[in-house]
Image (tube, rainbow, N blue to C red; front, side, top):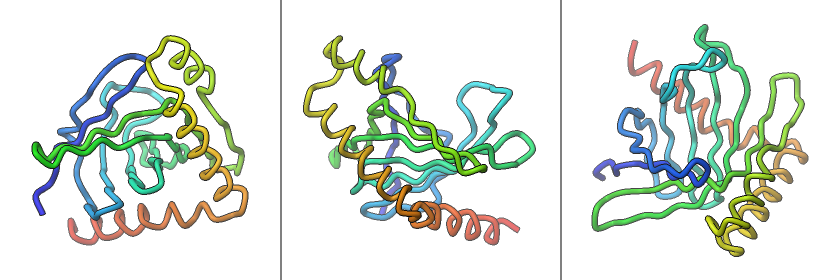
Length: 166
């Protein structure tokens, strides 16, 4: 299977970014896992590993600082646009995010941006409904104490990558 060209589409700000520097760790029909460095230098975070759960509509990322310490787990609500003719996948960020901190606290972010995007007609009503249903699905997993099921593929990919690069 040839690796697809991966892109991230954001609505606010409006941008389409090729993820050409991301290292593809896992490529399955419903799961892609990548290792990456931040696109722009930041003091708080440096790099991470992201799992795109393509059948579920979210991306779960383990975020590290420059000292390789976990800062938090970051979850994006996404929709997938595949083009088999060009072997590309666009991950569209539906603006709503969930951050899970190491102390167990949870922060839901950017619902205001989703509202703004709807008012500005950057997203459709159907996309907003999808984003909110996806958020609900993710929160149910978190509140039922099953977030580890989304972390496990990332942890396994990190272990496999580390042991193959020794």
